[in-house]
Image (cartoon, rainbow, N blue to C red; front, side):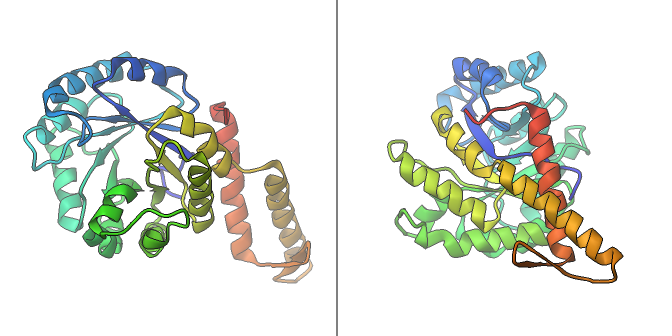
Length: 293
């Protein structure tokens, strides 16, 4: 587990242009808030959004939630101004969009370094076919990468594919990014579900992502929160099973055996490693005091 390991069951995008949503974030049951200055913000509202987010960061009060700011692309007229305004405030991480290779990561880190903050971690959005194909290159670029976040809606459009209940068109891409993230110890979060009317499909997407190995899901509306939190929250029975796995293999090792059967399943060392991570995550969620509702 890296230095940035923490619960990210739910990561909610909050438009910086909407003062009401920024204030409402103080009471939401969400693990991470992404204060958004990026593409969804109208051009006429860019400066206002930045001002609002700066004020929100100075005001504080969002803890224990993780606070992330998505800045505009560095190639845009707002990107570097966003970084300079945000870099030395109270954000936990800065999210950069359209990251497609090692050079893009280095460009983002240099922007933060030049702004006077060489310590703040970054998050990177994986939103294009090229980014997926370069996922390993991106993941290994820097240990300051706290999380890789899928932008599945953009990816589906770029693939000329169609969104389906089974997420068929992007399953391979999702797996490739999870593999890259885990190979280099990065957190990885699934993309948004843009159909706000089909909550059954959203809940199913959460469970697909969880079972594939994602840490959580990014969201675009507060009413999606309970579904994401519930899907990614360790259940009491799973917590007890993890404890049983650790205790059983410890006893087996003390007796000179390297494996043990637990409820009919063969348990080895890697199962204990996973169980300890699972229990630590569960404890961190409990300490945050954020409900699933």
